[in-house]
Image (tube, rainbow, N blue to C red; front, side, top):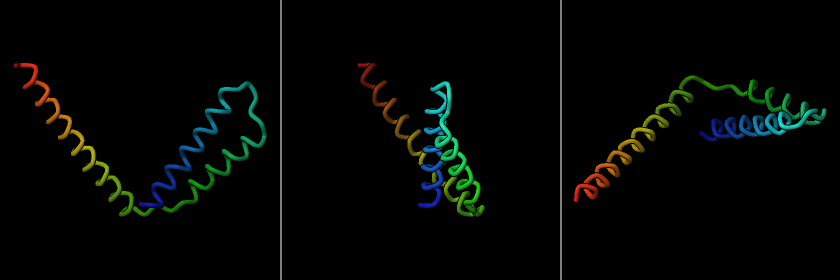
Amino acid sequence: MKRVLAVCFVFALGLTMLSGCASTKTCPEACLQTINQKVAAIKAQPCDASACEAAAQRAEAAANRAEAAANKAESIFMKHMKK
């Protein structure tokens, strides 16, 4: 789980750096080097199928719980609206 989160943070950092470079007309050489290093680090990270599948299942379970909570909140709200 920690490795998956680390990869996500590295990817987010790379995207942040990329968006910072995209907002300017010229991208400094240091920015390009940092982006290339981050992309290489992401590609070098081995991700076995079982860990990725387990993370996907946990995310799906969390989404299901969030959807159930939203449905419950909506039903409570609708009850109060009918009064």
